[in-house]
Amino acid sequence: MSRHQGSKAPSQRMLRVGELVRHALADVLQRGEVMDPVLETHVVTVPEVRMTPDLKLATAFVMPLGGKDEAKVLKALDDNRKQIRMLVVKRLALKSAPDLRFRIDDSFDRGDHIDKLLRSPEVARDLVADEEDEDGR
Image (cartoon, rainbow, N blue to C red):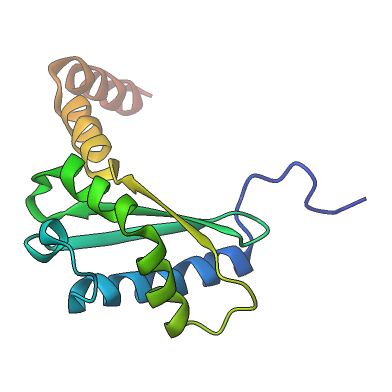
């Protein structure tokens, strides 16, 4: 029986390969090696790449600078996926080349939503009540 059975956390190997793919992908996009009019006119950041346990699929979370034209950029990346994959693989010394899948990174939006919730009057009221309870003990 595997000691990691049922574990949802990524392994060190998955994290390391994901980071290598992220750096290679960011380098390809930064240097403008993909000849696409949409990608040539947008700066695209790659905050995270998640690998599957077998390292055959890489999900790259991307965000165009300023969050503009997300759908166009995502479509351009998908349309040029094979070329991008070949350019990324050239930079990596992996046994097999992972397939690339692109998703818009919504972690910034989720972070903003959590910040707004924490600053809401209801939460502020609860925090003040908790502090008073601790002081009253």
